[in-house]
Amino acid sequence: MKILHVETGRHFLGGPQQVVYLINALRERGHDNILVCPPDSGIDSVARQAGIRVQNLFCVGDLDLLFAYRLSQLLKEQAPDIVHCHSRRGADFLGGLATSYADIPAVMSRRVDHTEIRLLAARRYKPFKKIIAISEAIASVLREHHVEAERITVIRSAVDAAAFSREPDYELFRSEFGIDEGMIAIAAAGQLIPRKGHRYLLQAAAALKDRYTNFRLVIFGDGYLKNQLRSQAVSLGLDSVVQFAGFRDDLDDFVGCFDLLAHPALTEGLGVVALKAAAAGVPVVGFDAGGMPEAVDNGKTGVLVTPESVGELQAAIATLIDSEPLRREFGEAGRARMKNEFSIAAMTDKHLELYESL
Image 1 (cartoon, rainbow, N blue to C red):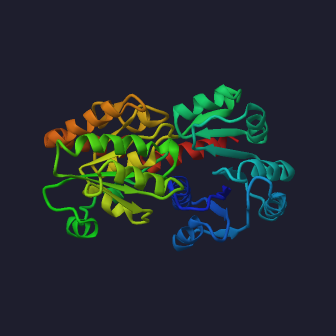
Image 2 (spheres, one colour):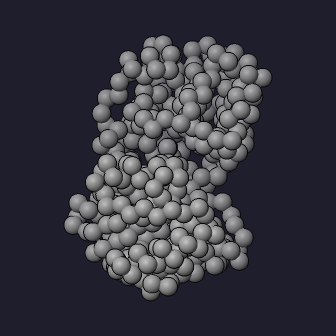
Image 3 (cartoon, helix red, strand yellow):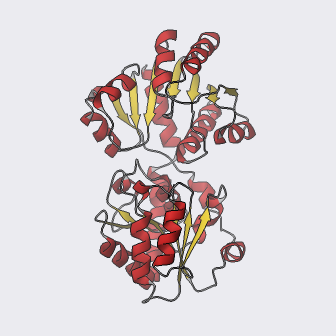
């Protein structure tokens, strides 16, 4: 089978990584893949290093009709069996337009759970035979937008559990982030934007700092709220507690060194960072929102609390700080769950089944 994948995201975040996982697994099973992406995107270099066949097309957004035209010409030239559009910012709306013109069956992955205008949603999803939701939460949002239930299929994101089974370099970790042995290290990772809920985490950290003198919070990620969140941390007296580490493409190497992951997102498609933490044996604390209840087995691999509740978030973190045995129990359960339920092989099987049905 020949599959042409379209991913137009600028940065190599959770979505593009899933695309690389899928293409590599499909290739191992003997299927032909072409990845269409912008030449300046994060996935471009990663895919090329992985030996994936890449075709660069510029895309500046949903109004870039030239991208749609070039993609339609490429589709006629390559004649794939299936087109899989993986992202927004042009790949869905314009990708659907191009596949309709080329008369090739297409599917689309939806990774975010926020709402959109119904009229635009109807136009966006109309060209696609199937819409792949990465969680039941996203499937529910799609149904609310009047997308027919028979066109929706749920295929959850995967995590490379084997990659997180290796012992991390604790010495390098402590040196890199200035965290002494014996300290409780808490990680948070995500774009510094409102829906990721960092402001609530900082408030919780402020409430914890007087009770615990041995914990540190490292926040990974970048975004337009960076300066605002830094100012909030200073105003809360968290200078010696919180460290803003920026975007790190080597975060996977360090995540297993942390004692817990805090992920207070208010909306979340699934929460790939929570999957990675679990695969590394790290318990997760977060808000019970979006796809997080699917990523975290509440009370077994982590703790989920009421969204926006700083008090509950603080209490959940404190519970795990106080109990190393509980952290270990949650971590071991999370690692097993990722291996059994979120494998790349299972995710690939479901995609192949869907492709073949079309």
